[in-house]
Length: 283
Image (cartoon, rainbow, N blue to C red; front, top):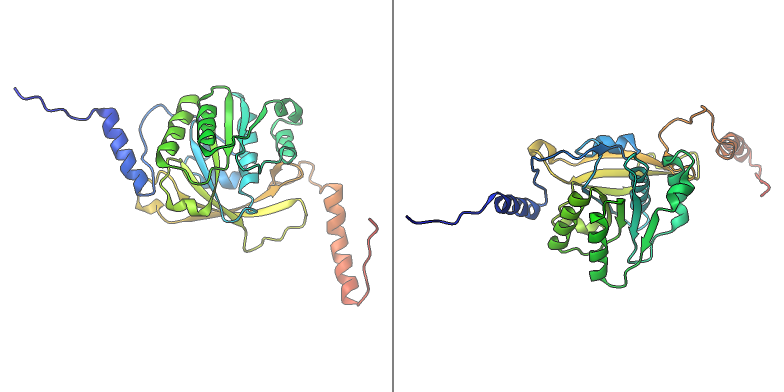
């Protein structure tokens, strides 16, 4: 009797997943379903394949430029993950020194219903000095059961490191939010979704200085068939001052005092300019 060694189930699964990753997509395994949580943005939830953010997964945000708003969006989603009943810390792996903690406070306040100072104590920032240390820090943070979300800005990532992060997130239950340059779209990925973030080209102007309109495009992920290969896009609005979805109506139905004053002044300024008058406002 001749015994022939055949690959086991785990080996077959890894082989198929590796082939899917090389093709620029992903491979979906049937197993225990992880909970899917809202990102805090209705439009983004509809764009993501799972209908929201799945615990124990990776999301890649491909930034068209460094000022595209991808980092702000990733931090906003991280605050939402930390404010869920399961809770947990937000760990920021800041290899390049790009993170500005005060910018996250409005999102913490909104996500926690005004108790942002309590969650701020669970905001941890790691600043590794080497690329290898960055890879290790992301891996360890994703494996930690006490971490809700990991935000990082990795540049060039080896597929092996990405696979390690995917397995780490699955084991620990944390969400990995990786902000990467748009050139990374050519690399293979183990992320559940890849979203390209850029400034909205049409209707990009808003009526408030605190609002930022972004154009999102789903450009990678666990495609389920040929019908999902076409690029899907959506626009969202970040309310940077109040840390919320800018497309949602105000709770009290009225504009904040500062933004309301700005809007009321616009028609007056326009009329004065048409008459050739100068408009001055006291600072």
